[in-house]
Amino acid sequence: MNKIRYVLLDPTGNLTCLVTDPVPPDVRSAVTDILMDRCEQVGYLTLSGEVPRLEMMGGEFCGNAAMACAAYLAEKAGAAGDTAVRLSVSGAEGAVECSVRPLSPGLWEGRVAMPPVRGYRHVDLGGRTAALVSMEGIAHLIMEGPPLEKAEAETLLLKTAPALPEEAVGLLQWDGDFMRPLVLVKKSGTLVWENGCGSGSTALCAHLALSRGVKRIAVRQPGGTILAEAETCPDGNVRVSITGSIRFRGEGNIPLP
Image (cartoon, rainbow, N blue to C red; front, side, top):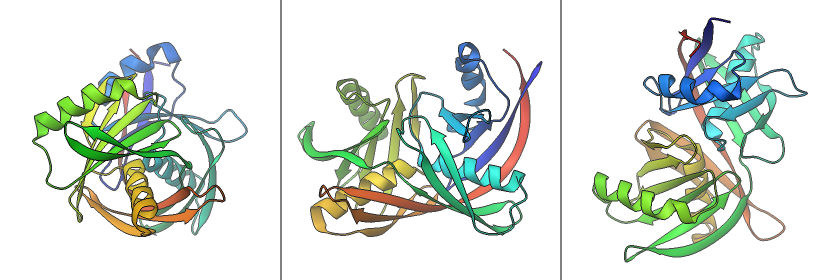
């Protein structure tokens, strides 16, 4: 194999390169470095198991990428209506259930049941209180109020993330109407201001459900809006599903590094 094929998918602005050829683990870092010039994140699709496997670039979990992968598989199979897609996704212990449906050529709507919230508490971040929402594979710090300057936010996340065990950590700045997501993936060392963040939308919905009883919110962010809906689990915590759009932006290939 001299070329590695990928498809460029756009789930609510969170541009994702989905690599559709098998890539040995020892060259994935080099492939990721090349593709990150074209997107916000990279995922690797494997079809050899019982269910399709999506492995994100840093072993993290991503709801947007899961929805995008489900839409890709449904379109590849020629699905013409509502389609359920079951995936194995990095950062999630059990199977991830997605549902997708075509809206127009190259445009799909997707819904995914996100991994359950594992922890919720408040922490101090440089004199401001933040909510910390922990899930499988990723944790998010939610700061309400006026946003920080870009460099200050990046410094704060880089300083705080190493103390948290999750593969990826986000800083979500929310002013009550608009969310600005910044995500650090530790393994790949990428720090990205995301246009759309599915796990961030999940964390914000969980925070509002647990602190204020708000269980449904349309989360506005730079790339568009993700609908997040929470339900209470038997243990008193919450589980969130998100709904968003997926656009097919093209496909391409790169030389094998």
